[in-house]
Length: 166
Image (cartoon, rainbow, N blue to C red; front, side, top):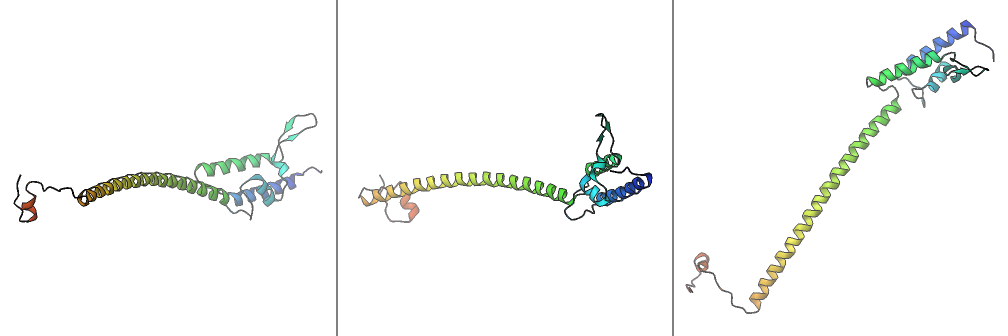
């Protein structure tokens, strides 16, 4: 692979900076993300220039555009730190996460309410059953012919003419 001359490297750096500005504005191509892959695609350079290289002796040297990759990631991180989300997909993910959290909280609250209502229903049914049993017992008592006694003073309240007193 031929080495880059100064003119080609300068024009590539200008293209990378223009692509960097486009991505940081949020103007992403369809299917693109705010990452080095999209930066390389928009600028027309290979991604390998953004990463360090290995010499034949095993030592490392910086990639031709590694300083621009570091600048890009730093600027992107700075935007994210102040709450600006450049990537619309990342914004959508954040929105969906917040919605998911809200839905989970609503489900928990609804489950608690259902448990309370179930407990109330059980208590109400048991009270109604007890009242029904008492009513049935009293009806049986009347129908079995047992003498139902009037309590003292009941004749006065009902307006009846029974003046029997014990």
